Amino acid sequence: MIVDSSSLICLARAGLLDLLNRLPERPRILDVVWDEVVRAGRAGQHADAFAVQAVLGRESRQVSPVAPSVDQAVLEAALADGALLANDLTLGRRARNLGARWLRTADLVLLLYRAERCSRDEACHGIESLWSAGRISESLRHDYLEAVGE
Image 1 (spheres, rainbow, N blue to C red):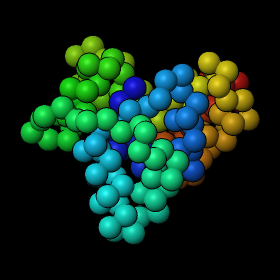
Image 2 (image 1 turned 45 degrees about the vertical axis):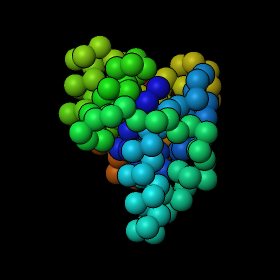
Image 3 (image 1 turned 120 degrees about the vertical axis):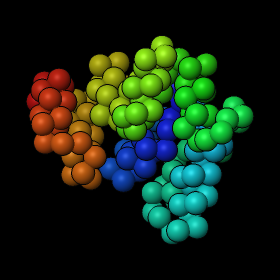
């Protein structure tokens, strides 16, 4: 699964980066996304950049396809991989329309819960954290909590 900067930042701000380590396969972060989130973020002293580096390290990084933009590189990699984790609606819809599986950050929480890679309490906490961090609406919060049986 290719992880876009929007989801990395969202997971970091909600304190949920460790969920990426529960995926059946190691998430892949393109070097251009790493530069955008970690290098630029650290230069700006953004706490989420330090968190991403601490939790994911270098082993999840992947060389980007040559592309005119970060979004295009992410899209091409997601199409080759088959899955994209992104909160960017335009990028996600485009990936889905071209045949890649598209998940948003809250979908990741639900996926891990259904795959028994996190408990119901952890899933509810994850959804609540995303809501508290302003990353999902009240309506989506309700829908996701209902999906985990809360």
